[in-house]
Image (cartoon, rainbow, N blue to C red; front, side, top):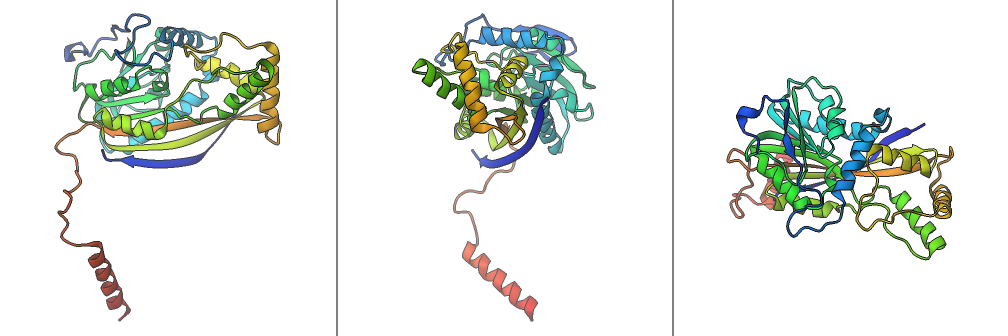
Length: 344
C-alpha cells in the first residue's frame, strides 16, 4: 500500500564552532522519568509529554507495529551508516529516544560494545527489535538523562528530539554524558515535514470554520539547530538535510500511519477534534493540490542529520588568525609556475 520514495534532496552545512560503572551489567535500570507535567526551568512548555508517552505506548502495543516502522527504520539505517563512517569502535553507546530500537538493529557488536537504549515509553522498550549488541533498557526522559558525566563514547538519537520542550537542555544533557572526544550522531524532523498535510488542513479549516488551529507540531529550523549544538558545547559540527517522500492512497491513510508511528500531535494548543466536513474537505484539497499521476498523494518528511563532537586536546583545531606564511596570491603564482614547467 505504501511506497517509500527515494531521498531526493540533500543540503550540507558545517559549523566550527548518572549510571555508575559498576551497574553497567544489569538489564534494567531505574526509571529516569520525571514527574508528569514537569519541564526544565525557564523552558517553553509546548508539548504534553504525558500524552506523547501514551501515544508511543499505544503504538508499541499494536498487533503489528512493524507496519508503521518503515520511516523510522530508514532513518535509523542512515544514522547507522554515519556511525560506520567513523573509523573507530565504541565500547559504550547510548540511544536517546530509541523507540523500538531502530538504530541498534543496523549496528553490530564489532562496532558497539554495549548499547544503552532510553525512551519515555516502557512498552516501546519491552517490544524492542532484535539486535546482536548487548543492550540495557532505561526508562528515561530525553531532558533528564540519569547518567553520570563522561560516560559514553557515542550517543545517537533518531526522530525523537522534535518532541522535547527544552531542546537546548536535551543537547546539553547529551554533551554532558559524552566522554571527551565522544561523538553525537542524531536525526530529527525538520520544518518542512508534512507541509502538504499542514497546508490542506489550514485551507479546509479556514474555509469551513472561519479560521484554523495548529494540527502539525512546530519544528526546529536548520540554522537554529547548528547554533543550539554549538551552544551545548559541541564542536566540529555537521548538519545536513534530507527529504524522504512517501506516497499514500489518501490523506486518511497518512494520518493512520502517523498514529501508528506514535507521531500524532501532542501540542498543548492543539484542537481537540475536527468536524467531519472539515476533514473531508482537507482530504479533497490534499488530493487536488498534490495528487500524483497514479492517484496517490505524497507526504514529505524533512530530516535534519547532525554530528557533533565533545572537545578533546587531541582533536584537530584551526590555526590562529594571521599565522599563515603564504598568501593565496602567492599560491596562485606557484600553480602557474608548475604548469609552465610541465608544458616545457
